[in-house]
Length: 360
Image 1 (tube, rainbow, N blue to C red):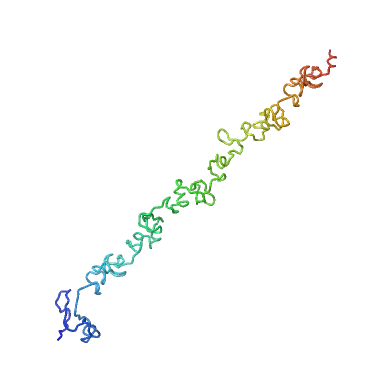
Image 2: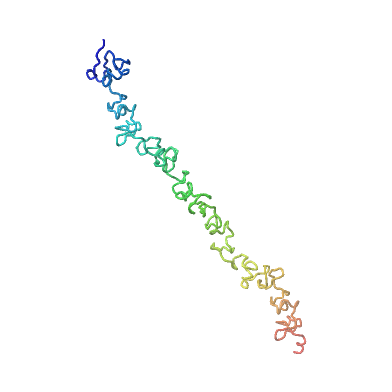
């Protein structure tokens, strides 16, 4: 004999109690009692049930303080709400993001949450290059950082002159610009000005160049810009005076120059400075003695040099040359010993012996 099926609301029992009615039911797994199909339709529709249990996270009903049907609230973290469902806080959402409209939202680069593979909160990873991380924030690689520098501690670091990156207005990697003069660029590296280069030379191709004798810079041990030192001789004139200035050639510079016959004598220096015996000469005017011999050397005066000198009465005769070389009739004389004839007349000319006899 079967008992009658009764509506659940007529059953007096606690909310979580199970009320069982003996006889065919809508949960007996049998097609009976005029059901349309096993345990459905017919007398089972629409609201008559046999067994009733309390609310759960799978009952398809928004109850028990859930944020949305069967998710969030007491159902979390086991069952969190998906994007678009209602939420009361971040813990209600699978994404961890409950927006200002109380809806679970997808992760973004402005949600204030470290998610979606970001290097740090809302920066780096998928947020870069639009939103890169600042100095001190976590990073996984250089592209995560606004500075382009992710150090060995996985923190974004500020630019420096030893980071191996061309940044902060450097002329070339880690040299020149703000790194100079501490770290200047070497030959071949890019430069924007002479101060960027160790050599002090930035060429027209904006490359640091090696020092040369035509770079317009005083360098490489030059005496003055592009001359002297390794560009020697120091002075074109060959004369560096006591004030360490290149001087023009002169007759007192100790250098054979300006067409002198010998060092500082003869040529343009004569007659002020003539050459002494043994020095080179090109002509008689080069020599103090007035004698430039066939070997182009200034020679001492002699009684055969063809020059009136050394106190001779006339050229190469008389004076110290007599009696070896006395002067002939008509030549000048200073005394009778100067003349071969022994007669030096009143006009200081050697005269014949007969003139002397007649005068007597």
